[in-house]
Image (cartoon, rainbow, N blue to C red; front, side, top):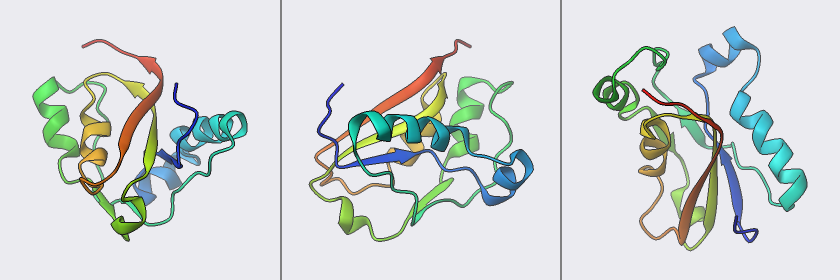
Length: 121
């Protein structure tokens, strides 16, 4: 893992989902990584705008559609030339992290993904 990231980006939950759950599991993982790498976590301005149903029982195509246009990033200019580490709890098809990564400007230097678990369909 590249330890020279500029920002750690936990996958955001929709505000209603976070209220239901009481926590954001990706943020909890990101906080542990922050301790190790000494890299700041950015959550401000990275928003899940679409309340999505759980991905667990969806097909690959349904997952892609479920998270399509689910995220919005304000002040994208702050990420130009930066190396980002997106953190998600589970990687199955990559739909969620791809949807989020598409929101960053093309001029981002690098985007890597770190997950806690990998699941298979």
